[in-house]
Image (cartoon, rainbow, N blue to C red; front, side, top):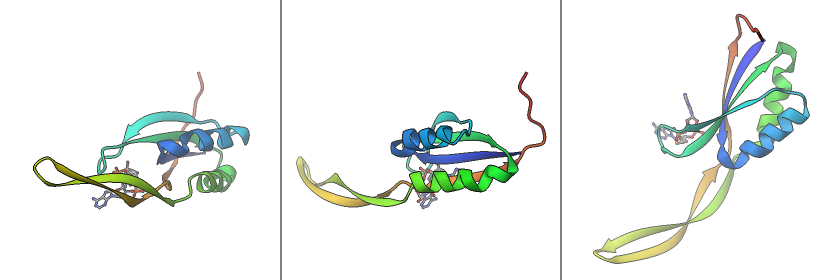
Length: 107
Ligand code: 2BA
């Protein structure tokens, strides 16, 4: 058995956990925060049989594709003056850790 930790965008967390549970994977969701951006993300914890790991990764990959979005941003030029303009940001994607599980118990 492997333990998969998948850090995904909050926007994708609902669809990816639904897709995983539909395929009979068991998922625990944690609300987490990225150290660099200090923005909320979601960490999924999954105990997965070795022969199902690839399928699990495929599902996560298909639900968490990297994409660009246009979001409003603003800058101040001098005291009290602001300009608003759209910027392109990359969202989505997933960071995965796949770890060997020494023991698994449900008591
Ligand atoms: P990603 O590399 O896609 O990482 C997304 C989130 O996944 C990270 O959020 C962090 O919560 C987690 N993560 C990624 N790699 C990890 C690792 N090796 N160990 C533990 N957790 C990990 P943030 O830390 O807020 O980073 C958001 C995005 O900012 C990153 O996207 C990356 O594109 C960029 N980034 C992160 N650290 C950077 C740095 N030191 N310099 C430049 N860009 C950085």
